[in-house]
Length: 70
Image (cartoon, rainbow, N blue to C red; front, side, top):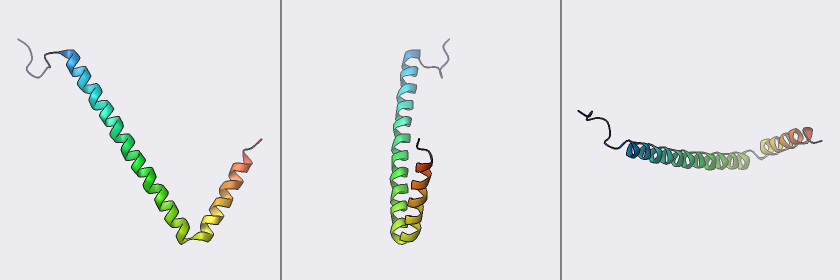
């Protein structure tokens, strides 16, 4: 007697798992994109509010980048 909890067609179960996984990946990418947009917005706001600190941070970043050039 077949188990009532197991799917009738094992291929169907695999396909559903794959669809769920791709949906999960798409949702993760959407959440990540939203997070990065909000992070960029927060940086811009901080730069507008504290221009001196933003300029110092830009100069430090440029110096770090210069350090790794050949």
